[in-house]
Each structure stands twice: as structure tokens, then as C-alpha cells.
Amino acid sequence: MKFLYFHDRLLRDIYRCAQVRSRLLQFIKSTPVDMILVSTHNKNIRDLKPIDFLSYKKDIKVYDTQDTLPMEGVRLYEDSLIIQNHVFKPVDGTVFVISTEPNLTSTAIFMDFFSDERFEDYHSDLTDDQMVELQNQIKKKTRYN
Image (cartoon, rainbow, N blue to C red):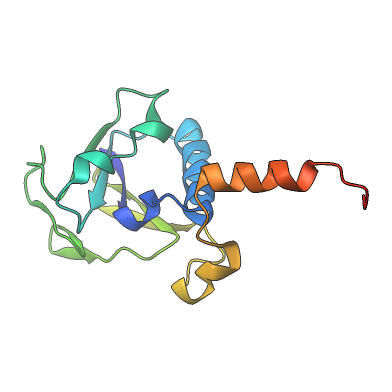
């Protein structure tokens, strides 16, 4: 079984996270994945599930900390994932690709150069809608351009 693991911070409605989700979608299109595990702090996780960027691939099941996982010996917490006594800690901008067959293996894929929260303002906190509006305003012709 092959699955992805990350923290729900990747699902925030900001430009940087949207870019990471876009890269993640391209990865999912090229790599078979059985399920996605998401560590969450949010008790209203149903609003955060990444259905928007997985809608083309409805057979991938998404589980979070609120769900009962279909695998023995796997525990998903708000800040970590434990499989066969191996602990995985989510890192902003990074997605773990974990395979359980034939042996447990994992690879951390770095998807965001500015994953350090100190650089988040570099990309801004604008939502996708605000980014589109800003781009439209920039494209408008004025007497100065």
C-alpha cells in the first residue's frame, strides 16, 4: 500500500499552500497512491479535506485524525503519524510518500522552497480570489501604462 502524509496546514487558503497543492496534484497524477493521511488540529476537518484538488481521482480515500484508519498498527495524531514504531513528523512544504509493501519505506518530498513560516509573508496571505482580483487590477490599463 502506498500513501501520502502531510499536515492540514497545506490546506490553508493562501497562495503558497495553493502552489504546493498544485505540485502535489501533479505528483499524484504521475504516481499511484492508495490513500492520503492528514494530521489535523482542526475539529471541523470536513471543511478542510482536500476534495478540491483530488476531485479528478475519486478513488483516493482521505483520512484525518478524526477517522478510523483501515490499517493495523497505524496511528495518526495531530502532530505525527506512527507506523510500525516509526514516527513521521509533518514538515511545512513537505509531503511524505510512504509504502508498506514489501517493507516500510518512506521518502519526504520537498514541495515548497518557502516552507519556513518566517517566509510566508514573502508569498503573502492573500486568498486565491484576492490574488485573481489583484492580477485583474494590475492588468487594467491606465494613462500611466
